[in-house]
Length: 465
Ligand code: ADP
Ligand code: MG
Ligand code: ZN
Image (cartoon, rainbow, N blue to C red; front, top):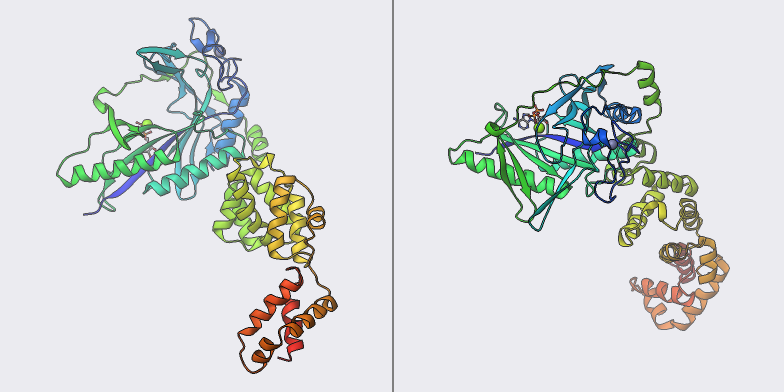
């Protein structure tokens, strides 16, 4: 019996605001512990939250970019629980009246997007526990998918696209290591097409690798339990990266009753249609739309197009190079194969890359006009990446210009024929494979710079074949 996996993701994304959601404290990452705090984010009695307009704007952007319906009226609620990193005793979130509902990314429906504040961080070292409240009050959106995902690969693809969208729109910096983007995975298995099974929730997966590995482990574990006649208990589990497995954290029985109620310190959030429309107009072309456009306009494969839209700066670089080169397909190949290789090798950001898209375009023009050959082009490119010089400069400096003057090539071919009388005789007597040898000799004679097609046709002409 094979089991079908059913997966829904809950993604928490830090909104890229300068200040927290209900106070003016900084949200910057990495400050010394407890230096970015005030009575509001510490939850002192009587301190009053004031909603950050920019956070609402970014949340609306996320909702528009994922095709959600935005509700002009939503409500902040208190989610009550005790934890050392939550000194207020409650988290301000949205519950039964969220900001947005019913969106979609690819084939995965989005159930809801709501706004909330992050908690602080507990740090356990050497038998002592500390709490750092710098993160308390950082604005978040929680993006909850429907259980439309069927495998670890699909979950990876969904989160990849969601992260791209949030980064394209400058809603979130997408940094999973710093916790700006975190993912909980809800996993169940069922007989194909049957009723939904009982799910478990794996908390706080902060890398794509962990997400895939945790889901695969959980599918295998649940399938094995059901195979052997057992039942799945609804519970929260934690993924242990070093063991590659998930372990129970708390079961449904121990689950919190959060006693949600509307926060009496905050009015309902009312956003005007005109503002939503204004935010919508400023949303840039999104990655999947861009990838479709590349396929349509430049006849790129889906795989190539996707590789070029992974980030907005990279896509911008490609488009500028395509423009400057007059040959978008060549530009796509160079960016995909060579530029990305160098960025990867040197751990560089496209923004810090020496070769401007205009210079890459000029290199492609040199190739297309026959000024340099394919092999020299690689050499010029590597030089450009190291020196930042213009391609024309490098071609001159390295003496790489191709010989495309037929008279020069003909002269060289005559010398080759004279010097290799034996092979020429054998070739003329029918040993056709000697042509390659003679072409090789001609290339040698011209220092490898004769334009290949010319070298071939002139040699054939002189050999009378
Ligand atoms: P909770 O608030 O308790 O986490 P939700 O109803 O908000 O519960 O669901 C959370 C996530 O669980 C959603 O992403 C949803 O798609 C997913 N989910 C719901 N039922 C199942 C199921 N049977 N198997 C897998 N995922 C599920
Ligand atoms: Mg949940
Ligand atoms: Zn504060």
